[in-house]
Image (cartoon, each protein chain N blue to C red):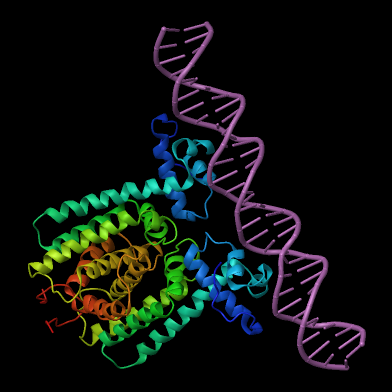
Length: 208
Length: 208
DNA sequence: CGCGCCGTTGACTGGCCAGTCAACCTGGCG
DNA sequence: CGCCAGGTTGACTGGCCAGTCAACGGCGCG
């Protein structure tokens, strides 16, 4: 089965085909539950070819994660330098992540489920990159606290975690089909996350 | 190895010893990476005994998760009925989860890493219980919106996810050793989460 | 036209590990 | 004291699967 919509026969980028197939298989069955032959089958390629392009099953997931995460890091790094209100920056990050999910839900599912929380396997392997994202977000918050845009009741590191955690949990909601998903919801989620984290839930917000 | 501090020889609760050992092993090596014999060794018990008390390796994790999650659900259910400000209720939930982590970090690590985000295995199995927690939190928010304590800019379901996501991400920070942890930090985190989600990060919060 | 390079193939293997099971205690009871 | 029940033991097996490797083919080049 597995009706691959990829243009069969194009000898050009077998490696890409394997990566794309891996995303689908990992998302469908999970990294541990799937066999390497599943990936090969899904890609319409011989088993051995996977090992021609990748040293191991792990390396396939590593590649997928790093490809995407590095783009995310670039986006945040660029934002970090710009002179814009912190709220806008956080909205831009949220938008990027939500759009990543809209564009390729399977890939984001794999990253969140298999890497970001995998404290005993891939999460450890990629801790440096993951930590960098948190750090960059914390910097945005810290700057905003310095110039008085944000309150200083909470440490920047902590705020960064709350913010990122809120985003990931919303994606998780979509992944588990606990939250409704669709074009409208995606756009809504962007403002909702930022509104919740920056504006808070309280009706009358006054400094204590 | 594995200097078990459990009172050896007490034939009374071998089952409990196995569960406690499993928590340690799952936390240390991860569910997929560990062998059933690791659990037996850690418990100081024969391999076969694990299968005397549990039908499968999966059932061990299922038991651990349900034991803890049901306590959490009870706490939230009770809170749901009480007549207290929503902010206090959310603080109580946060406190309970943070204290759970303080009391048994390994167990919470296992729950978060192996169940709560495991979209292709245990997360699916326990989706009903997980979803119930989200639903109960959403109800708290909905009630607060009705009586005017909370703004209505965000749906209750969404607010619940943001709130829960923030908590889990903080625990994840401790688990990965990305955030400093200790008595002081635990207490701080409780108010920080609630302050962030309810009060927001913005310095001057005014209704739009 | 022939040769070799390299992308490609897929059968095979070595190791690992969940789960089984027959035998072995031990303590309580007749 | 002998016998049974049920907790306890750990060697064993059956299946699975990551990774290997020898062989294949087709394309370009001499």
